[in-house]
Image (cartoon, rainbow, N blue to C red; front, top):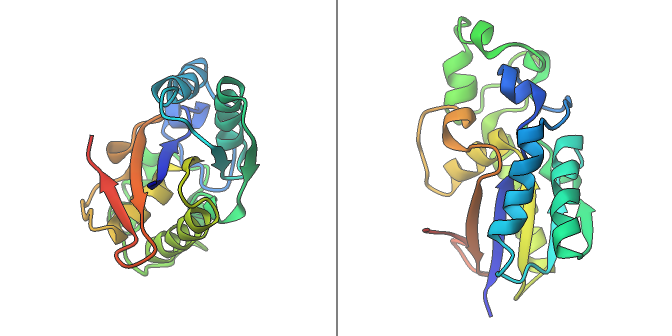
Length: 194
């Protein structure tokens, strides 16, 4: 039996709608975000999800709770799934940040750049990769729904060979789902094509 992780980005938040960076900060799900969360559960209803694991940030937990109501299975949070810490840029409007010289490298590329107290994109990707590997090993042969964040997904997918140079807003819509198959030997994760 395959070990499959269904990676989902949380539903839309007020700050997503306003295009403000959240990082470790929180804003509530919008009505559309709640609907997107319900659609995650709807899309996976025939799969047989065994467990739901989310980032501990409020927007991911709320998305997971909506899915949990549909599946009636346990939900737990996992600290290593936190969104990338964007340091002093958290809470700022993207339109302002795009005027700064570091914007492209910090939010469109995956490098070791650490400015303004931000976690580097490379470190974030490695953290998420390790977390998913631990979770997959703990749930071998199961289908797990993992709810976390767009920027963290962008950083992870770079390590999985997806080397686009654009930001998370353009790569991962709120409520999107990407499946990964896991094996216990390298390369560990394979992106399941739709």
